Length: 258
Ligand code: ADP
Image (cartoon, rainbow, N blue to C red; front, side, top):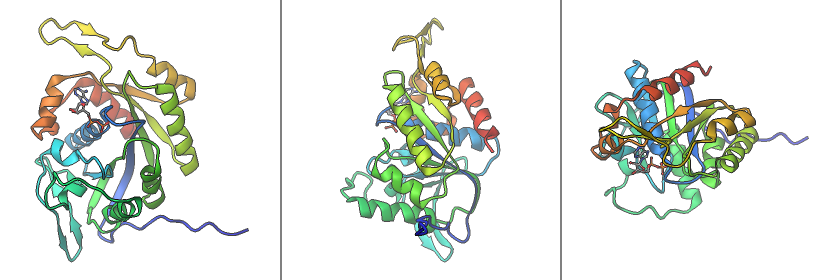
């Protein structure tokens, strides 16, 4: 039988990464980048060495929420990522473009090459965790990420208005195809707590996500609220300042993933 050639690329020689975690969503706008940023920030608060690889090449928002503008430069040991205020390393297409407002109008092979560069030509140094902000959906670019990079597990982000059942099924199928474990589901924007009264509102109705996760045999890691404070932190490029109890519980679960 013909032996299948692995398309996986090696990391840059100066990099070593404990766990690489891909953060996936069914469609855009559910808060995938936000959750990626929050997970990375909480891990960093736990004194872990953390990197974020922004694989959402066509809609990069990682540099904005971390407030890392500027461009990366090449050194003898590889491309140095940008550092956030708490010391998280960030690599994004925005750090390569001359102007971050330039639209990225690249065809799939160019995007694929860019992703390979982010993995193999960047000097990530020694990291405990590398979080990958995936392109939305389970399409071509997502597949390229899984084929080129050595990913250890997947976190799925959903929001209550999502067709959760379908998205989860698609993500599970993709994970199976790639032979990867799904670490669990994070439900973003599940509820809203009125800041003046402390009353909780389930704006999109009572969530069924936990039940669906159980039905599909996937861990439900927890939920995050709709919080204008979070949106404000992200807008100011200070996502690392935002803390909420449920985030801590979610990251506890991710730390248990071996
Ligand atoms: P995605 O990466 O899935 O496309 P983003 O993370 O860019 O989505 O989030 C989309 C928008 O929703 C952003 O403007 C962000 O500020 C906002 N947002 C995401 N999650 C929350 C939340 N929990 N509370 C308030 N605003 C949020």
